Length: 84
Length: 154
Image (cartoon, rainbow over all chains, first blue to last red; front, side, top):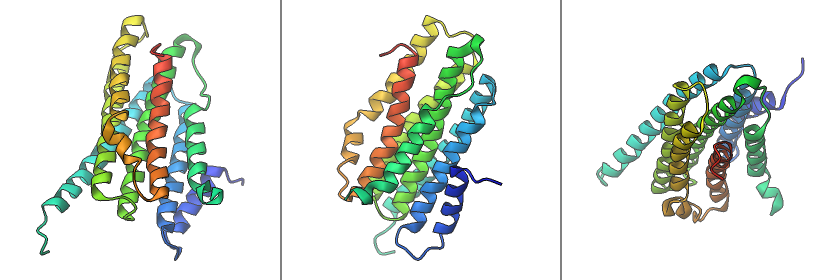
């Protein structure tokens, strides 16, 4: 069994969350994101154009929901009374 | 100083190599497939960028207004990728008219990336956060540049 770089990045990403080092969790999240980018790139090589576009559409929906939720959270922080 | 930059440089190099890597193509619909692949990469970059910005915000490495500005730019890139995907799904041949129509959308994303708010993001005081934010925007800008090339805009 051989480990590709993206497999190692996933392992690092998983372990970093438990490391008692400042911003280790962030580094772990970033490592996981890079691993997913590499996985997505590999997966595309075997897909048809239609399949690539279908997957991209789903990805865009996920991203839109993620951004909307975070923007809503940030707006809620703005409107919170200072006394809370 | 150089050692401190290694992690973000590694991420940048990996992400950009992922963005420019070769993909098997069908000779009969090469250009359409190539554009579809770049649009998919743009979607991936927008997703990865949004998650990176949210993670930076959670670790208080950027302020809430900076996080909001960065997310609004990424949202424009994601919305642009969505429009491109919808149009590409509806066509079977990439002729000059279609290219021109797709290029208009790509140019709108370019304009968002060149917005003064985007440039202001690079004035974040923490150098590591600045590099990461710049990395997110640079990856999106690189893919937008590749799309422009494919569509004959450059």
